[in-house]
Length: 90
Image 1 (cartoon, rainbow, N blue to C red):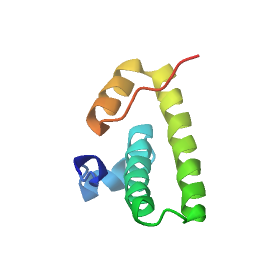
Image 2: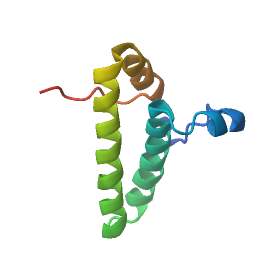
Image 3: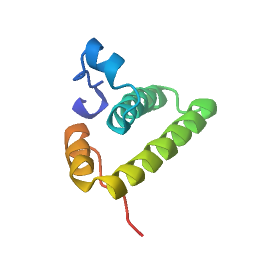
Image 4: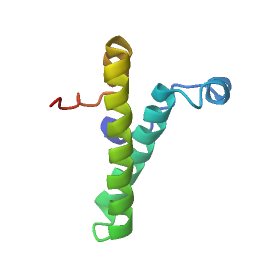
């Protein structure tokens, strides 16, 4: 159940200051993904939510690819904090 819990590490002040940073966007997408995943466990035939989940997953993946190319250290720290898998490199 820990995996589906919402992460609330960032304070309100940090939200206002860093809302455009890549790390914050990935953090927000990860929270949305976890909420949608728990929703879809209960509502298996909610196809619109499944589509929304796939779109958010794609956005998060693109941001993670960007971050891994720009700054590998920040990328490693972020996936460690959020407890997500590393992206596949081609």
